[in-house]
Image (cartoon, rainbow, N blue to C red; front, side):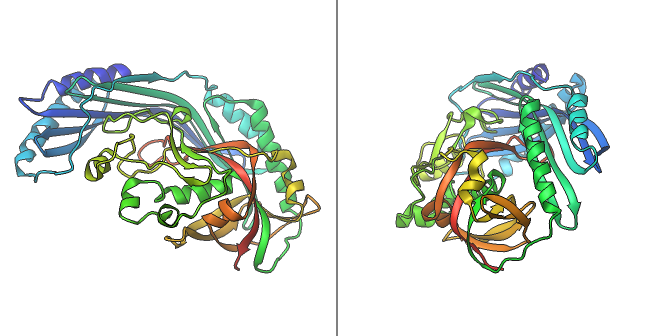
Length: 440
């Protein structure tokens, strides 16, 4: 794919005239997929696709268009030539954009990942063996993801990475199931087996008679998957400069009223250890990391180039949505193997469902428990509990009621495959929380 990108980018940029600026953003993947149900492969396939996003700029006017690439030079060359002509014809009729900004500092870079993935067949065999005798449902994806950028100023960026993502469930019956995930850039049989053993233990516990508990406030353990849902919800509107300047951030009370989280909370955008490129789609470089919350207090913002120009702040490579791509919540001091003992009596929350804001300004969220949520007593799982609704603020969950975070963290890769495999990721510990409010 690198050769295809370099050749088509050189040709495209050569089509610009006079004071025109042409920028090309490239994305591509070679991925394999397998869908599983009842511990068998029900659908398998692969995809190889490439796209070129082109932007032609003249003064303060700009126009964009996307092109699907085939890898056949004559076909791709004629496509981009037609697109450049069409964009040039559009420009005179477009209004000037006062916030137009484009990369002009020639911040070239190259990051080519190593392929340490096992053959897909071997990984699938390991998954099928783990599901023998059970109803395993899930999806496995793996392969190479590429991104590139080039413009008229001579900037050239390239990125490639290799990753796998397994999202699976051991299904029991009704609404009772154990959900788990395993992702990374190299398959570790021992790590996978540990996840399988944990899921099997929870599956056995799900077979016990369920326990009903009244609404109220409970000591809970939020698994890394559950905490990832909480933090991910905050990230949708919490850290972007635009949301903060327009007072649409869910962390408004933190930004304007001095509310803080527990001092052990350190959250950052960790591009260095993420699975996405070190540049955004317009070619602006991303720093290795951006502190978002430091010792419970507000850190920096994610600033897109457009927001940087509109509000006079330095950009830090954020996308137009100013949404984190590689969230990283620092680990705590509680060893994960002993977390049930620390919980002692309360609720183990394996996952969350239907999480949404009930009060955006207060960063209050409501949702439902789901997948392997258990009543714990004497530091041991006693019984599954019925699905319950909760209503909590981030200032309580990661603030005044936070007892501690686990030493061990889980890696999550976004399972989204709409148009292409997502490269968004997060690393999350588990959290022990007092007085967690269950409302129904």
